[in-house]
Length: 472
Image (cartoon, rainbow, N blue to C red; front, side, top):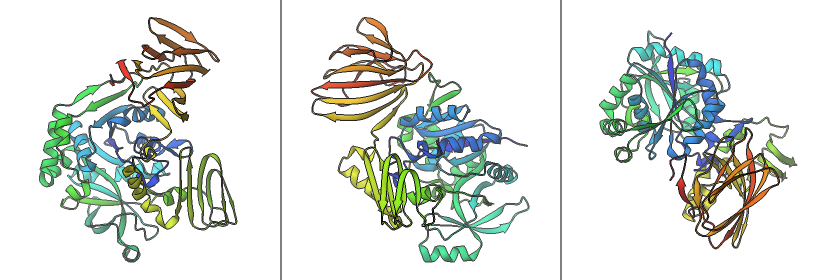
């Protein structure tokens, strides 16, 4: 049996799941199902298909992808898009990077498909059609008249067991969705594709030659890096100038709706693209009043209310048809029938330059994380976590001093010309302008409290002299 190379498309921003999903930490990295992220679940689901794994992601998310590959116990290549150019360009980069004969399975990183065995069986059923030059798409058998998904109308049955695609249908209104469901010959468009690399390149050459040419130029001048602290993972950086000139378009518009050799196979298992808070709510078990709760939510005389409250108690009293999403620095309260408009609110926040539109209070870094727990005039307090063996950059600040207190683990501190260790409950002081570095020499996470004081406390007041992550 031929092996399949999964290609995980990881470039979405997930604005409809704000405030949990934000540009700096989009929904595919958020632990939404149990303690696992959708990306980790996707990687675990494709692990049994037999090929290496390719991930296409944004440069800013590279170490989150590498960490998730490690959690899924996989190795692979991460193609780093210099800028976002939609799925046609992302798929073209992966096809050009792969060997021509490889069977590439393109999967979004943010789908929830609980039955991994059924998923793998359906994907393998498409190999015969893919070997004959077809681009195989997979449609989900619809369970209700959704207006959030596009549809695929099935055509004639082919000898290889696939169905010719008769029509791609845009997201319908409610009446049209009901009609499509009753027709019985349509499937939800899941955005999952299987094709040999050479046949996908031929389809791009036929229907989107400009996108293909830009990606060819970007891959021809690409650079490969083996990052520290990410064993078995390589980063491929396409040329920025060539890729920036690429047109942005989805693979559906660029190729699939025009290409003659596109077939579909039905997937009959449970599936969700987790594209809105209603979809997230449906993952939770309802009570007798159709209320659903994640975390520390409480309902009283409420109906059809969803509460996401991982950090503190949130109470819904006498509510109907509400979504309540609580995070440490932002709260969303919305009618359930307005879930698709959350992205519009994010746009308004961006226009107002609200940091919460794009950034969480807790920020992920290649070396670990920091959480801005308090701030005021001329001071800021952060909790900092450093992975075992990881180091922050050798740096200095022009406008602030720092006080460090170790809460857990051991810190190796470079301060000027001296290097020394700090254990739990020990502290040190970094004066303004002093060259310094923080390193975790231990086997457990280092956690510390940092108190910054000074006239300016912005993150851009960092002069990196030496950095392990290419940010100097």
